[in-house]
Each structure stands twice: as structure tokens, then as C-alpha cells.
Length: 84
Image (cartoon, rainbow, N blue to C red; front, side, top):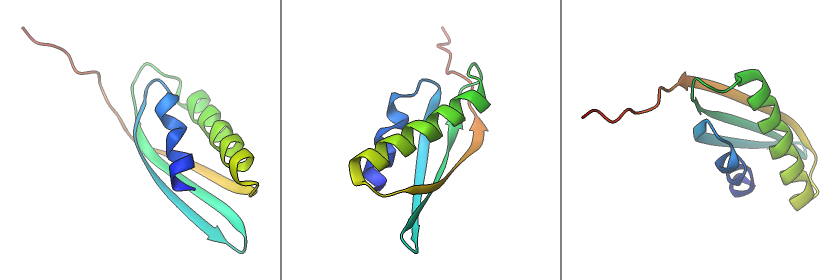
């Protein structure tokens, strides 16, 4: 399940270094995503879309109901500039 979850953020622009934690409690799935974003994205919209995509992907591949997905942004990273 962790592999399924981790494949989704790779397709998101501006989201990086996502760490995944999955807990299964009484047959229900709880997913925590912790990562970094770039400053040019809209954080609320992007995290909501990420939650929806992860939920759809995991439920369609496994048939298991995802109870909760938490997205925690630990850092806003600035793009690396090439200094000449």
C-alpha cells in the first residue's frame, strides 16, 4: 500500500520529498503524507487534490476503504538558482 501511495505525489508539480506512513486499524486505512512544497503552488488546493488522488488510487487498486489522509507540509523550499 505504501508503494501505491508514494506513486501518486511523483506526478504533482511543486510537491517533493514525500514521506508516507500507513496505519491499518480495525480494517480501515489511515495515511499520513509529510513533505515539502515549492512557494509558487497553492498549498490548500494542491494538498486537497493530492488527498483525492491518493484516495482514488489506493481504493481502486486495493478495494480497501481509505478512512483518512493527512497531508503535513514541513517546509516550503525555494528553487535552486544557478549562480554564475
